[in-house]
Length: 380
Image 1 (cartoon, rainbow, N blue to C red):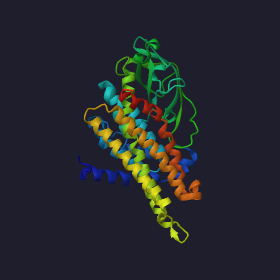
Image 2 (cartoon, helix red, strand yellow):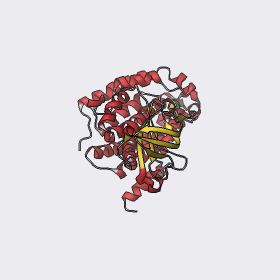
Image 3 (tube, rainbow, N blue to C red):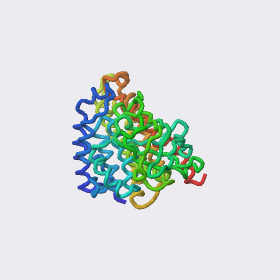
Image 4 (cartoon, helix red, strand yellow):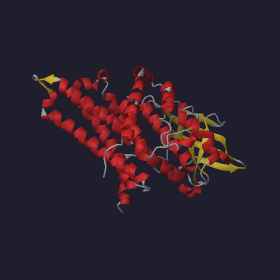
């Protein structure tokens, strides 16, 4: 086993961190207004961060799963706007990757270059009020009428929905078939019959807008179907493998920032005429932050490595998702505790990491669902 990075990859990581730090300009104002950062989004597209796993022939970087995760880790480390990081990752892994893997050549030619460049924003529209983790319960329907499908239904949580140009929509061509009827469609935001609701107010990830999406006799050309009828469940599952693996590398970057902040503060802050880091109660907490980070990082990159080598890695990806998300929440709690009272205020700007991390245990499948997947792989 070789745990080192090549010189080229390390250089790419370092340059990505340097670039991502430029994205922090004006962050306080964006957070206060919960405003999607259009200018920073376009910069990410120009740098290549929106097309990491897109083949070079379609304007992307053509990176492997491991290398993609490494760049997303750099993104989460250098960029303090986790809403932007999340939006970019959801765009790429939940929307773009399925088109790369399953879309027709005509669809790839039409969409991928713009999506990788960031001139279009993509949103994922899968979740419904009664179909969150149970994707077989989708009520949104797609009825074939000649060379178009008629879509009707409501999607509950569409990440990037309010700012999207394109939505990857999952609907059922025959609800009686359950998950066997789920089909994916690439739908233009301006399609008649498609309406996006008002953005939700959230506890974290403020600059990443999310909203309900309504389909009322929305006509979608057959040419915009992604894959064949009934492929939707498989397409969605594959996109979740990308998301649970690579998106969560961003939280490794966030935890690395938390760790460095905790060490710096523990050296500077003095109580009882000594740095607080000299007290075991504090130093051991920081040690635990480091141990959880390293454990989560190893699980994530093992899962990505397995995917690159043809393994579905269902259990490994689920384990890494649980480990990273729950470690991120605990890391945020520990950072606040180390800072003490000032850590609870927005003045210190450390409480945001906790608010941004809580969602990680919920999206892409809750921790409970991941444990169910792991149990199933164990034969239970």
